[in-house]
Length: 382
Image 1 (tube, rainbow, N blue to C red):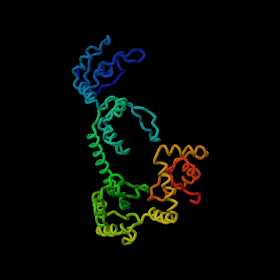
Image 2 (tube, rainbow, N blue to C red; image 1 turned 180 degrees about the horizontal axis):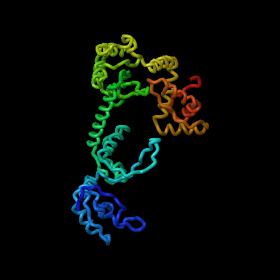
Image 3 (cartoon, helix red, strand yellow; image 1 turned 135 degrees about the horizontal axis):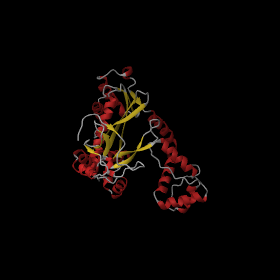
Image 4 (cartoon, rainbow, N blue to C red; image 1 turned 60 degrees about the vertical axis):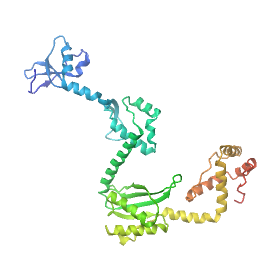
């Protein structure tokens, strides 16, 4: 019997005195009154109604589910490709988003999971092949039985898709920014011997918070002259649609950058009027200036720095030498602290190397006594 007239819900029929259902079938049916006030049993999927049985028999209801189109479709959707795996998820707190006060039944979405894997790969610089490792897939299936494996090519595709998606979001955000300042630098990779350039955008958002995003990380082919670098920066600005929003650009205090800035200033002036007619456009990196000052001072003690640097490198070049060195450290009751490496282009790393080495000034002579090939021991005067 079907009716389109208003109906009223009642207490679920087919329950034991303590309120518990006698059969799982009752999760798909409920007790209702029809327009005439007669109690009926209705399917929650199609709302077809049946006469209430005095014996609470459920055979007729089971037969109905086998032919109920809505029920069969819902059941098929839940099992399709295993993408609706039921899982427990944490609900967020309206007071504090870091607090998870409750659990709710969530759904496993394979597409979202693959996107999350892509984010994880890029955030931690994992190789694409990690998704094919047995340990990774074993871990995934332990937590998500419906997990489907993915190949390295699939991982690469998802990483590219995530990148393009995030780029669209950032481009939309930059449309509402009035002024953007840039920082840029070039360097050569140690292993590949390839020159790279990175461009970072900085701006103040509506909440007066400083924001920054990497806008480009690109290989600069030779010749890497000022004009070529300026053209590469300008192409990046055009790609993001911010060529008319540039306020300042900060680069290292090197004469080679002057040609780059001069060419770039001409491009920007054609798009907008620069602050103070461009006198503030070129900002020389204060950290680089400080490094040049410190390096100039260190040149006065270059011979001493070279001896200590060579000594540290000699000790660290062999596990056997390190073992001997720290055996002496232990004998002298000195703090068990490792030797610091140095990046010669950074004055602060040179300082850390010297500050650590001076704590071991009594160790190096004793190390020379036990290591016959060590002939660069710093003197007491050093």
